[in-house]
Image 1 (cartoon, one colour):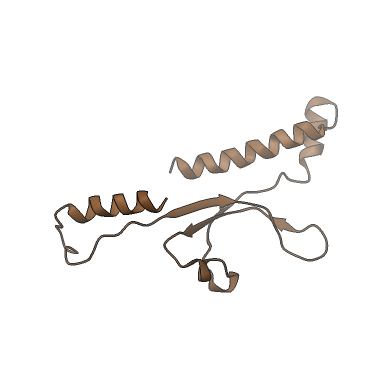
Image 2 (cartoon, rainbow, N blue to C red):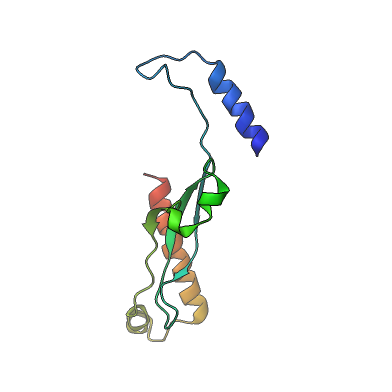
Length: 119
């Protein structure tokens, strides 16, 4: 990964600087975007599913500490509502299977990512 950063830095450094900020040194920024469920309490099942962004150029010693606020929250993936099972029962005359619930959770997740990527 470091070789790619160095190669890109050499490319942009060798190009002529123009414009208002031509006195500033160009640099490459590494960005990591990911998502994972986070439990909000030590009891119960309250959780949230954020999409987070980290900047790789930041020191790992601060990036890994929650109190440094290195994670930037981009969006939150909503859960299926508690009424989904009722809606499914009404529409199809039977309760949604665990496979169907998993499928629908994936569809919601994919839909949110699709909206973000296509902006």
